[in-house]
Length: 435
Image (tube, rainbow, N blue to C red; front, side, top):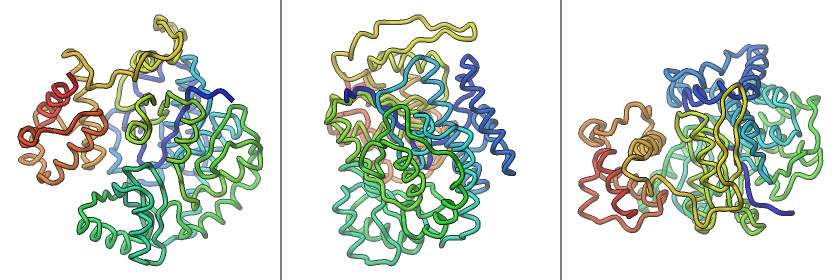
């Protein structure tokens, strides 16, 4: 089959308060999708997720994890589902759909294998299964090493329940396990000089520790209709295309405990000709993986990296050579040239003209907020990372390295690192090195 454009659906952590506020107003189908999901959510005894995605002062990711983790999972799926409708609303379907972790549910829904309402029911059943099974306290830690090194570390520790769970590419592998085991992972990683980041996750996902919860979930969703996808879906969990209703059911039932070889899936699609990867969800975790893991011919487009409007979505897609148009509800975005791919990678914030500084600052704020756990709104251009937020020099160095990788920069001059203590200074450094 001919593959050029892949739509990616993120999983854990892909939440941004108010991310849809200005985007669903002019796409009735997107607003209707959110309303339909909220009908299911409230029928199952949960609070609606619409306010989380439409109100700018909604709780942050960190607050939801601490106070209402169940609602967070529902909000992540709702964001993905609405993002798919936004893409459809501007005429973009994608050649292949692929989800990461929990995002596989959204991929199946967007492909027509499961209705959006039934995926919302699955998300509610998943939450109930966790409550009933009460799995041991666990979580996820991302290590900045390839999968083989992470597997070796897990083998050396030989801790019960510890697994290399998610392969995100040469630069990152996620391990899953009990909290005590993860603390040992973090300690040995520090001793080895390996960056370890505790992810915002309530359970040890993609791990047999969740087998009891997975069994309860399978029983709860057994009667929900799952069919064959009408659009091509590649499943990282299966390692192949979803070609039947049985395949789709297997994706749903294995999602909680099966490992995620996401890097292998990206490589497979790239070898088949995929060059544009659109992340249909909040933030830009998968965009970063594409940029750091695939050759430079791959173009990564985050659909909802921060708050914004519909025009910004269309502009980003067109920059990547993806035909996008909009004429609905009285709102029209003029069509541009969409004949074939651009000559090179789509411009990133690092290529921005001086007038694009606000856009670059917004992207940096999201990147730093995602890592540090602060609300993005707190990270103003002039706030000092160390003096005001207590971010030590080692952490700042690690974050600058992440910035360097994301924007494809050369090695950062040692003397300039010390000056990069505010987002304004970091933005100036990015622009300088991209010239």
